[in-house]
Length: 315
Ligand code: FAD
Image (cartoon, rainbow, N blue to C red; front, side, top):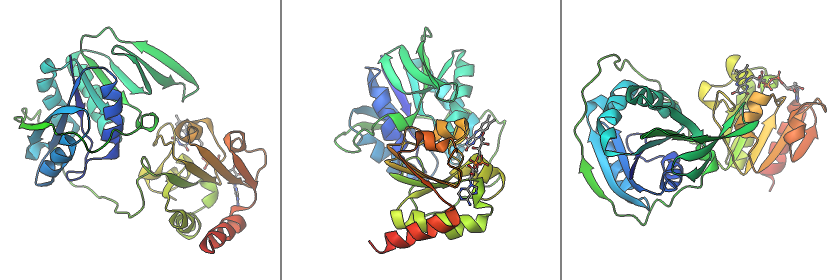
C-alpha cells in the first residue's frame, strides 16, 4: 500500500494545506510519497520543503512547463500516469485540486471522496454533507481511492524532521485541451484565509468596496488577521472572489472569526462555524449569526467598528 499526496505550492513555497493533507494521508496507514508538479526554478525549492515533511518517504518532482500554470488537464494526466503505483491519491480540497481531482477520478473510473474530515479506516472516511449539517460515513470499495481533504479539520504535519529522497518523474503527455492565457494575482501581506489564525469578515452591510477598505481592513490589520467576506459582499463587488467564506467559498476554522454585517445564512455558516471563537457585530438582534456567536454585539457597524479599531490601537 502506498499513498500519493499531491502538494499545493505556489511554485516556490509549499502551502500549509499540504502539511494538513499529509496528516490525513498518513492516517490511511500506508507509506506516503509527495508529488510536486511545477515548472521553473521554484519547483526545486518546493520539492526540498516537501522532502523535509515528517513522515514522507519519497518526493516525486515533475518539473516541466506543462505544470507551470496549474492547468488542471495536464496535471490530471500526470496523476493518471502515476496512479498504477499507488492505492490512494490524496490532495487538499483547495480551488486548484477541486479542479484536478474529479478529472483524475473520472479518468480512473472511480468515485472521488470529497473533503474528508476524518479517516476511520483506510477505506472509510467521514465527510460533511448538506452544507455541514450532517456528517456522512463513506466506505469506498474502489481499488484506487481518490480523496480530497478538508484541511481546516486536520492539524498540520511538522514541516521538518523528514529527509525523503527526491526523484524526478517525466511529464505525461499534454491532453492539449487547455492553454495558459494569463493571470492576475492579488498580492497581499495579510495571512491567507485558510491558514489565518484570526479572520475579520464583512457582509452586504458594508455597502461598497471603499467601506471594506475603510472599516474592515484597518481592524484586520490591527489584529494581524486575514480578511473574508460573505457571498453577498463578493457578488456585489465589495470584495474579491478569493475572500469568500462559505459553502461555495473557503472553509475556515481560525482561532477567532469576526463577522461584521453578516446575517449568518446557512451557506455562510458552513464555511466558518468550526471557528474556535466567533464574534458577531450586527444591528439586528435576531440575525441568525448570533445563534453561533460566542460574543455578539448588537450595534451599527459604522459606529462600533471604528471604536473597536481605535480601542485596539491603544493596547
Ligand atoms: P445579508 O443576508 O443581506 O445580511 C446583511 C446583514 O447585515 C443583516 O443581518 C443586517 O442586519 C446587517 N446589517 C445591515 N446594516 C448594518 C449595519 N449598519 N451595522 C450592522 N449590521 C448591519 N453565502 C456566503 O456567505 N458564502 C457562501 O459560500 C455561499 N454559498 C451559497 C451557495 C448557494 C448554493 C446559495 C443558494 C447561497 C450561498 N450563499 C453563500 C448566500 C447566502 O445564502 C446569503 O445570501 C449570504 O451569505 C448573505 O450575505 P450577508 O450576510 O452578507 O447579507
